Length: 114
Length: 110
Image (cartoon, rainbow over all chains, first blue to last red; front, side, top):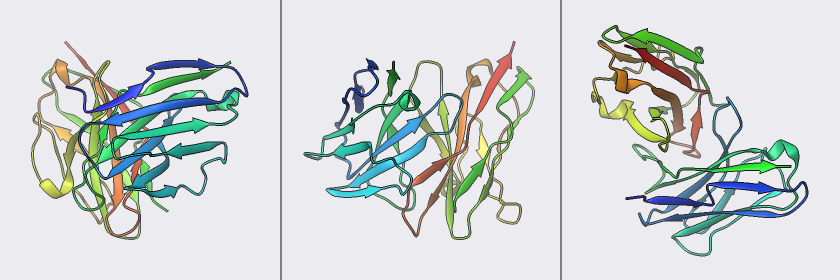
């Protein structure tokens, strides 16, 4: 049973056209993360929420925004996608932050910007 | 800054042979180390973590603070071990976020 669900699995968007990726969880976890993974590279953390507390990584472009309207859902908004934003976007959750915290990942959304 | 290095992008061994996937890290604080695995067409999932000191699917990993390494080992590889393996580090006293290595694609040949 999928516990972290990402929609859509595949998304093609035009250069400059805003796009929103969705993540939902049935685990009731406090923490939700968004990672970007480009081809043959490590997943790179963009930002995370601890409950409603938003934590942005210093090098995350301003083009990337996130919303968490409730515990179950988290959205990644890309305001003006560029060709370089083509990547796999991974959502993950963990029950808490700190020692032993396991991250549970969704299947990912493969975004292609054309 | 936290950094995780997996020097091998690809590793291929024969079934029944020992496997070692290398992971080195750099971090000045108290890190927690993990191995995550992604099987074909499946999501990324936790394989093991150093604080548990457990063996999962025959894999073990020992944290060596002197060498700043957390290599993943299995004495006898099986075909179902073929997957992408990521070493990851979490700062348990700071931001507590996961930082991943680039991953090693392990292929077990019959």
